[in-house]
Image (cartoon, rainbow, N blue to C red):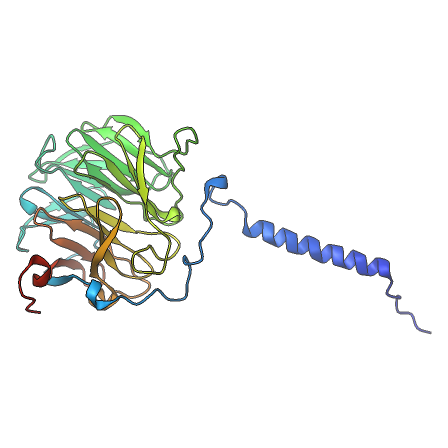
Length: 346
């Protein structure tokens, strides 16, 4: 006797309904807002996740490496330029200070593990003062490296990834809480910048990796990376959004991958220096965010795919400094002679 259950139209419908429910559930899981970014998240565009980025036209590479400063510590984490173009490199609970020619002039021992670094420039209230960002707090050192203060902890959820200074202000990017904090120079918190606010047309910072950088522009504005939106946003010190620029693209003039740029700096004339992760390329954009040229690409940097450039900075002469985790040192790039109006001797 055949004991098999006959297949009926009703059973087919039931099975189809179950399969459809499974598919819908899987899609819902994939689209869950696991980062709390709500409807403001920018969906990936067609060029945000290609297999490989576009090759760099050699004619666009208008800088060349002119020097390298070895740093005898590992890991190297942060880079800053201070008065008289002194170069500061932080890592391994210390800071090494170099003159512009690369000679070491000082070492500063730290009480916290540094994650980011800023040094007061000539216009700062205390030129040469050093601000070190740890995981959840900022430590302050004077020009000679003596510890002055450690500011209050921001709590367990904080993760500081960048520090910047203006004349009377200190800014800290807190990746853990997705906010930029504004302090006065005594460590008093005076404001928060970048929280999502539809009325002020502020999208909020979308961050999924610990690369959340900021820099103070010469025109007394604050520029901040919004990594998942693949752009740089510029704010007043009071938190008004003035400008945003950047495009998700594998092309050389855009930002590649899911979350870029990883680091950036601002040149004395207001132009931007950006460094990407996923594909090691350092580029120049003008003060309006328009692409100008490439400083260095993968061939010049020789960084592995799983490595990220530790930081970038610029000095008063327009030299671009790149902190290379592979070499454990600072790479110095300058415009090729042909870019300065002289014959190219390279």
